[in-house]
Length: 103
Image (cartoon, rainbow, N blue to C red):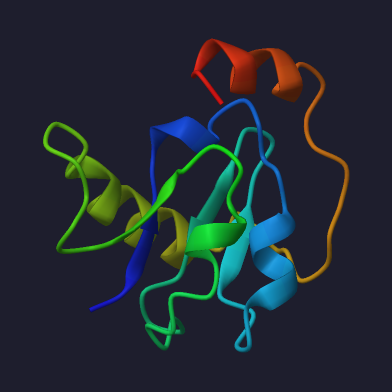
């Protein structure tokens, strides 16, 4: 089992989750973060840190969002992402997106 970043992260890219990750399994692009399933040790420390509830265990991804399991794996294996290991500013508009998501 690994953890998965889902749709709620898109447009936010809060990085609170990366600060508690003991294995640096988060990768990012200009829109969001992804978890490398090959590196994730299934600790779950990142889940309560996500302010938009975008992270789930791969066997608990909400119905209709299962595609994110493959997207995380593919994006992390692509070689196109940057390893995100420290807290950074959220994307412009992240607070508005967070509010629109109901958080």
